[in-house]
Length: 77
Image (cartoon, rainbow, N blue to C red; front, side):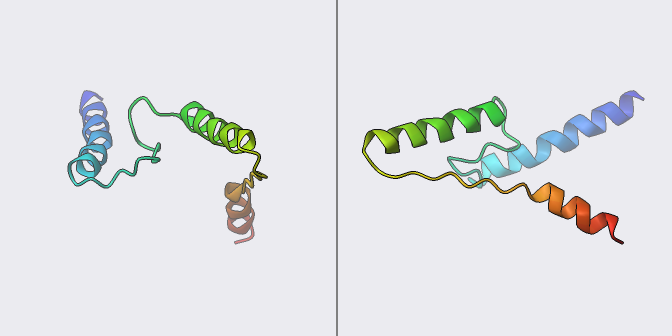
């Protein structure tokens, strides 16, 4: 059982180190990064919308829920 846990930790850490070493993480990339979560993304989006509205610009937020579409297509097979 400990071997499985060890492999999972190593496998989870490798992509993060690879992306960091090769500069593949964008500045707005929050997936698979330590100390980044959906709350971090929400705060960034909220801040950007508030800044844009303060400047007097019209702002729209479009959110696509794609997993529901994929679940529907998978269930039809």
